[in-house]
Structure formats: C-alpha cells, structure tokens
Amino acid sequence: MACTGLCDLLVQGGMDAGLAQFISLFFGVVLVATVPLLTVILLIWVERKIAARIQDRIGPNRVGPLGLLQTFADLMKLLIKEDITPAAADRLLYNAAPIVSFASVVLIWAVVPFTPYHYGVDLEIGALYFVAVASFGTLAIMTAGWASNNKYALLGAFRVVALLVSYEIPLVFALLVPVLLAGSMSLVDIGYAQAGMWFVFMAPLAMVLFFISSQAETGRAPFDLIEAESELVAGFNIEYSGMKFGMFFAAEFLHVFTNAVLLAVLFMGAWFFPLWQEPLIGFFWLGVKASLLYFISLWLRNTVPRLRIDQVMSFNWFFLVPVSILNLLVTALLVMVMKEIGWVPLDVAGNMALQLGTTLELLPMTVVLFASNVLIMLPIFNRLRRIGREQREAAEVRSRQRLALTPAGD
Amino acid sequence: MQFDFSTIAFFIFSLIAISGALGVATNRNLFRGIIWLIVSLFGVAGLFVLLSAPFLAAVQILVYIGAIAILFTFAVMLTRSLTRLTDRFNRLWPSAIVSGLFFVLLVVGVIWPVWGSTNAYDVPASDVVRTTVDLGVVLLAGEGFVLPFEVASLLLTAAMIGAIVIARDADEEEERQ
View 1 (cartoon, each protein chain N blue to C red):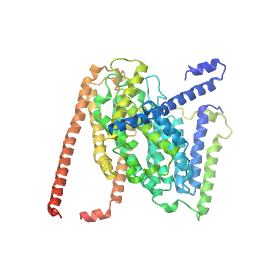
View 2: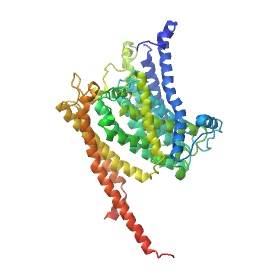
View 3: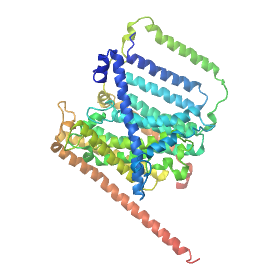
View 4: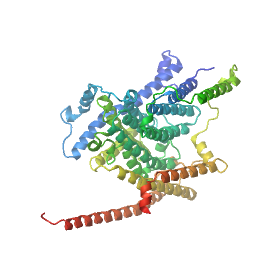
C-alpha cells in the first residue's frame, strides 16, 4: 500500500515505515468508526421529532434550540444511572451482548463507499460481508435474552431470532439483484455500475423487497414485536438499564440508518446525481438519498400497527421468499437474453459491464427489466386484493350474523 | 522465520480458534460452550481470510455463526437441564485417554516432517491467489464442480423436506384424515 498523507508525514518525521503505516491505518479506522457514532446522536433527535410531528405533537423542544440537545441530556441520564446486573444472570454474556450488538452495526460502515475514493475498505465481498455482520446482531440479541435469566427476555429472544433468521432469506435474494447487475459483490463496483442508470429503475421490486426485509431485520414497525413494549415488557432488553440499554437503543437506530445508506448505495446510485458530479457533492447526495429512505422508514413506523408473529412469518414464507426468488430468476433470465441480443454494455472480455454504458444505451434494458418487475407484481397484487376483499366480506357476514343472533336491547 | 503481519495474524487467529475449541470441550455451562464455539468459528473465518478466500470467510460467519450456532443455541435453550453439569469427570475416561493419545500422534505427525528445516516456514499462507469470480466459475463450470454442487443442493432439499415432515404436528395429520 502506498505511504501517503499521514503516513508520509510520519515517515518524513523519522518514524519507522511500518509503524507509520499502522498509525495512519489506525486513524483511518477511528475516523470511519466515528462517523456512525456521531450520526446516531443526530438520528435520535430526527427520529423523535418526526415521530412527534406525525403524531400531531411537537417532540423535544425544551433542551437546546428546537430540542437539539435532548440526545445529550438522555445520554447523560443513561450514563449516570446505576449499573445493575441481575443476581442470577450470566455476568460476562450479559455485559457483552450490547457491545456485540452495537459492534455488529458499526462494522457495516467499514464497507460503505461514501465517495468513489473515500471508503473504509473495498472488500471484494462487500455485499456478503454486510449480511454476515448483520447476522452477528441476531446472535447478540439471543445472548441478551438468555443471559438475562428472565422468562420474558427468553421468549422475546426466541421470537426475535425466528424473525431475524427468516427475513435474512428475502434480504439476500433481493441483494443478489444489484450484485447480478453489477457483476461484483464489491459495494464500490456496484456504485460505479450505476453510472448510467440507477438500479432502482432496473430493479424496483428488488429494492422494495430489500427495504421490507431490512425493516424486519432491524425490528422496525410493522415488525417491531422484537421490543413490543405493550406485550413483552420490552422483550429481550427487560433487564438492561442505563448505558447498556442505551447501546441497544443506539444500535437499533443506527442499524436503520445504515440500512438506508446501503439501500442508497445498492439501488439509488450511491454517489451519482445527474447534474453536478464531484466526490464531495456525491457524499452530500448519498446523505440526501439515505435520509430520504430513512424518512420513509420513520413514516412507515409511525403509521402502521404492529404485526403478530404468525402474520410476520406467513408474510415472509408465503410472500416475500417466493417473490424474491421469482424476481431473481426472471431478472437473471432477462439479463442473459439481453446479453445475447446486445442490449447490455459489455467490456473487452465479454463480461457484463454496466459502468461503461450511458443512460441512453441502458434505456432498453431498463425498460425491459422494469416491465418484468411490474408484470411479476400485478397478478400477485390482484390476487392479494381479491383474497383481502373475500376475507373482509366474510368477516362482515359473520359480524352481521352475530348481531342478528343476539336479541337487541338485552 | 519472518515476522510480518500475516504471521502475526495467523498466530492470533489460530489462538482464537484453538482456545475456542478448548473452551467448548471444557466448559460445564452448555450455553457458554456455544459461545466458545462461536469464538472458535470466528478464528477459522480469520484463517480463511489468510488463505485468500474472503468469500468462504464471510459464508463461514453467515452460515456457521449466523445460522448453525443459533440452531445449537435454540436446542440448548429448550433443554434446560444440561446447562449446569456438576460432575467434574464422567464415565468416559477410557475413550478420553484414547483420543488424547490420538491427538498426540497427530501433533507429532504434523510437526516432525517440518522440524528443524527453516525454509518450510517461508511459504506464505497461500501462494495461490484466486478471486471470488474464479470460485464462482469453478463451482458452475461444466468441467468444474457443478455436479457435486447440484447434488449438494438436492441433499439439502431432501434434508429440509425430511425436517418438515418430522416436525409436523401429528394432531394436524389426524385431523385431516
């Protein structure tokens, strides 16, 4: 690796080359890890304000201008709380679970490409790394549920793990579509491949599936039975108080934003924008796209009611998994066919190379893939509407029968 | 023996893998044993990275730690009586002695050929550097491993169907009949 920047400065100052490189890498790691930590402070405020406005109230408005310092006040409160560990709890695992949970989210930021030149590391397997690290969070939640030595926590942990493991399947299948289109699992390559056309126009269904699965993975409404406050007394984090709870809390918010950033990178063109193209402007646009998707997630959270665990499971296995598999198969087939026809830009070796195509060249391919996605969803939607209508009519008939059987005024 | 970062990384990952395995075998709390197993699998994933197989490392974490270890944990959480074993020695000491001897035999057999000769250590962890693209091509190429790949997927499907049949409610079946 070339010794530039900070490394060069240190070597010129007389430090050993290996040590200088280690220190500069270390500072790079600290920088990349600090970005999510600073983001989460702002995110909590954004979340509370938007939730409040949707619920027709104001939200935090006393601490600092517009309530901006509310997060710091909460942080202070959590830090000075008594650090309780239940007597019969497994001490080491109990204390390690929030750390692992938070670490699993921050680790994802190592592969996020902020600009074409600024990223933590360009892993060859970036997309797979993201899914693997997210599965660490599942482990942390289960450890928390078990180590708390509490029946409610254990029940919560069971449900959560079933949910999280099930929703990894449509997540991975939906993730495979941009990997397929870009020809590489590296997030930087996927970003470059969207130079001509964003993947949201080529694979809208995959984006929706990824969005839904990631909502379920992070435990956002309507899938927030993970910490269903009204049912399970806060689920797996009953026994957690103080800063340990704060870590779970921050990890959840950060995870939602991280998924929004990944959605923006995978589908909405990472750092590209039609008009003005500089790396720093790309960083700004990535933030805008991620914030837009985060807002949609918050909007959804504060609008729809919670689903039951059996509804969640049947939604996954009867709807998401078949649709995501079908989507992947149809997309792969169409891409193969279009490669033969010649509508897909290729590089010199004959491999698919979307980054070499201009928007106009990619237009026929986009139209075909978009039409295929619409054609997949139309019959499914119609069938679902019909089923919904039948169920509603059956329920109405039943309620009318019940009213007829009970004598009025009795 | 040259001390560069890959050697240090190899030592660290091997240490993690071996200590994890030791923890699994010696811990009396079954749940803690699973956590040690996860630590050991993590070390193995690191060794995969050193062997220039990042794909396998990620799949190791995703499948072994993210699915199989969680399955183990479910099994342990639902059989509560085994989480606190109190005997220090059980009745299997003859097989323990046999496996101890086998271990010594294996260690001697691996170390003896390379004992003393210094040029055997200069080989990097992997002198063949292949990318994930090569792995994909080999798995699916006609003259590659496509047949074992497809047979493995058939095997997994059969296992899944078998699990569903076994786990199905017997009452449900009687009701339907």
